[in-house]
Amino acid sequence: MESAKNTIKSNNLLKKGDTIAVAVSGGIDSICLLHYLNSIKKEFGIKLVAVNVDHQIRPNSASDSQFVMDYCKSIDVPCYKFNIDVPQIALQKKMGLEETARICRYKVFDGVVEKGLANKVALAHHQSDQVETVLLNIFRGAGLKGAGGMEVVQGHYIRPFLNTKKDEIIAYANQFGLSHVEDETNTNTNYSRNFLRNDILPKLRTHWKNVDANILNFAKICKQDNEYILSQINFDDIVIENKTARIPLYKFASPDPIQNRILLTCFQKLGLAKDIEKRHLAIIKNLVQTGQNGAKISLPNKIKASLEYDELVLCVPKQKAEFVPKDFKLGKTVFDDCTITVKKTSKFNVLEPNCHIIDAKKLPKDVKWRTRQNGDVFAKFGSGEKKLKDYFIDIKVPNSIRGEIPLLASGNEVYCVLGYQISDKVKADNDTKLVYKISYQKTVKINKT
Image 1 (tube, rainbow, N blue to C red):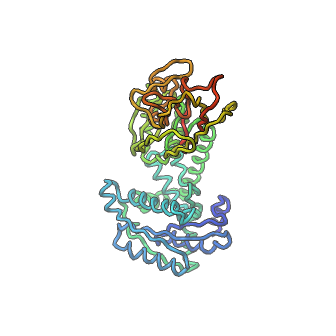
Image 2: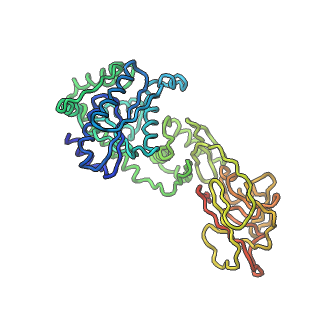
Image 3: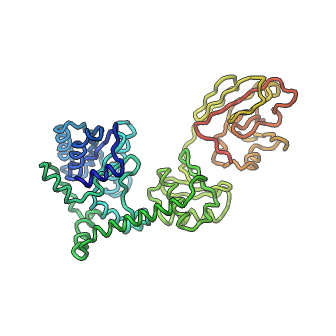
């Protein structure tokens, strides 16, 4: 298994202290992967667990899972088994079995990592799987990224066998006398991958002897070209946080390939790339062209795209937790996404970051921390009193976050817009002796424009 060892070392897949969850179906590829990683675990200082998912699609699925459990016990590797009624879920979601099984399987793998049972998941995809993936992606209309195929490392997923030929895996199984189970659905050409594997590729190989190598080389070139184009894009001025991406509109003066990659990268970083197609990118770019502040469109998976002043915002709107008003007091006041600390002091010559200074005598005693209400007014420095809504518009606060900003107010009079400004009515002056120093720390960053 020199090819696997080279892939592991050249990509630094295994680090001392890693706990690797090996996805094991019971087929020859996953059994060989588990056996091989188990044979080198001391060399790399890693621990192994196995994860088996019974999709309950096939009559023999339960016995296949039992085979995996028995094999893991025989080599002293802990195994986590999960049962998922994929046919029922597919019926409810009105999706195909193949796609539903894949989504459910990866949810299980992600859950294993989220629960701390492992920090990486090893998948048994090999060179022939890569060939099939590249062709399937092309047939589905993918661009350079899809044509580049699967990655050896993708988040917490690793593929040690991705540069290993199927013949090597079969030879390895024979060398160590490894038993495995056969998935009877592998011959069902109603599944796209099986159709490609069993019908199309054998015919291609009879005409072009080097077809696999040529496809893999093509994928490598596509991957390199895509990575180069991405390296030429400056993402520093794109803010991605709290499941929201904010893209400056001037980015859309770039050529189409750059715009497309900016959008796709944002969707990927948000974990929202699934079902986003070329036509959706075109719809978003048309929205940008309108330049109409506040304009919105809906995309797959409840994604909203909107124009907020000089930014395009991509997000899945979340149900906002109710902001319960709290009394203004010395010490700490904690909200779900913000901690406010108030001190009374006579030392206020130097204004610290994330801090407001308010004249203690000018602030009414009945002020409270709350969010905006109808009829709120605010006196901006040197501009007189105006509606809070107009103040937000003046300083270009995105409408999507206005309702989240903590306000210090009495009645409809707002004396502090946290993270932005205090009212002209409570500012310190030459006669000020004592002030409230209001410091704040947001667990969700205040989005200043």
